[in-house]
Image 1 (tube, chains in turn cyan, blue):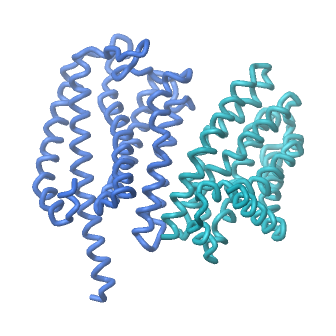
Image 2 (tube, rainbow over the protein chains, first blue to last red):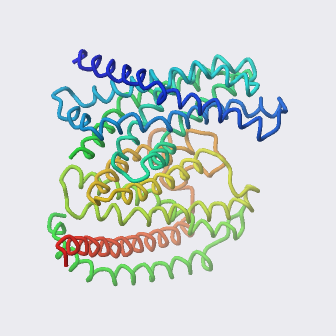
Image 3 (cartoon, each protein chain N blue to C red):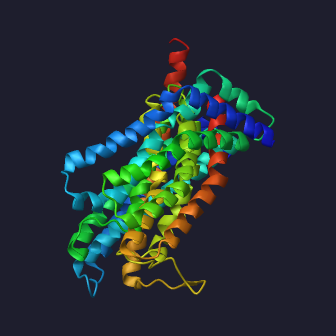
Length: 222
Length: 242
């Protein structure tokens, strides 16, 4: 069973690395959208520093959501998803493998880029570590919850916007706890409770999201 | 439930019961408004503005109850393949969205004189807004496919996924520091059910309005299911090339 997981994970990562442009587009969006804020709000470092935690998190959220369409869409179009659903291995595990590959090629680069974005937005130095840890705990949840939305909108018209509309309300807790952790650190308050709740959301998503996404995939390939 | 799975039987019951639902809703609504607006005491702190409660609370309750009904219908559709359950879920979604919107708007109108703000981002209001977005997402999803059956199946999964929001809404006033009033009717203290903190003179119009909204929902939902069945018939006729 773990061989099936690793095989699918390796396949997806290899495909994503070969079509480099698809995965890096999310990073490019993250960077360009972050640059829009100083351009729109004026370069005052005070203002930017005050909104930096929220802006970095919202942009990370939007970047992950924009990249969700490459999770299942291509496989659905050429029939691979149907084969994955018919596989004797549990669909839960295979969905988890695809989501893990998606996080490795989208979420992880996002986390690596986030300190640079935080620098651009003049985030208070106390906020950097909670930001990175929060993103480490939060972006897998975003990929997992996003997988549900991506699976639900397979074959729909305007699938991209529809996925965003479905996923954004469900990811609100991740956003709230992530920003809460950074702002608590800046104010000198306890950070651990926010990160613990972030971890709790991840634990819940790890168990429930692949199952829900699998159910949605079965409805899509029926 | 199984007898109602036959569309013809359902339509017979529907045509019979809808006028009674509407009449009952009108009666309870009139009684509720009479007691609520005229024959109940003003609040000792809020004066007469408390009377918005008689619309706001039933609307909020129905927003949650309709979502639960949608989720149950979706489960019946996915698990037992009940043929009318998906029509019920599709029918209920806009009604639930409407109740939630009424709750949010009346809450804002109540909040301005009481809290000084139309809207605050506290846990109860935010989670109700998320519920509204879930309703909108469900409506968008079920109508985003050319094959309506595919839309019903996807919407059913979404309705079940969104169930996690319901306990969050209910317990948000206990778990977080909120401006919103804590639980006053269905509340727990030390692990046991405690009495409501609202007096009987106010509970009467509240429950009358709740009954009115419930019957209104039943009438509207059955009406819309009739519409969905008619749409399905039209689609079948179109497919047959007539």
